[in-house]
Length: 119
Picture (cartoon, rainbow, N blue to C red):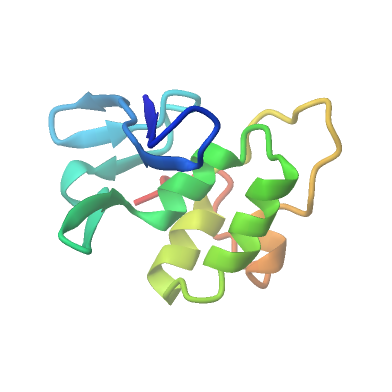
């Protein structure tokens, strides 16, 4: 669900609903990717927000030019733990559109496991 001040204006907020089991979030496109629910959000400006590496994961399924810009903007300030979780996510099914290099290539090739969870 998205909300804007007026039609055609940029979104002011977005609400995302995802799968979970017990106290774990499960990425609906690949159940190997999981995180504790307690580690799924951060506080910023008195609002709870989705952690950047999970948001980038959502954007990676069919990236648009805007998503690539978001990745290039968000990647530099990510700490090592967040970069590792993003790089360790299993590769998703390729889309028919040309794709930029996978995140792990831009993270120095530090993918530790093709099947490792995003935890």
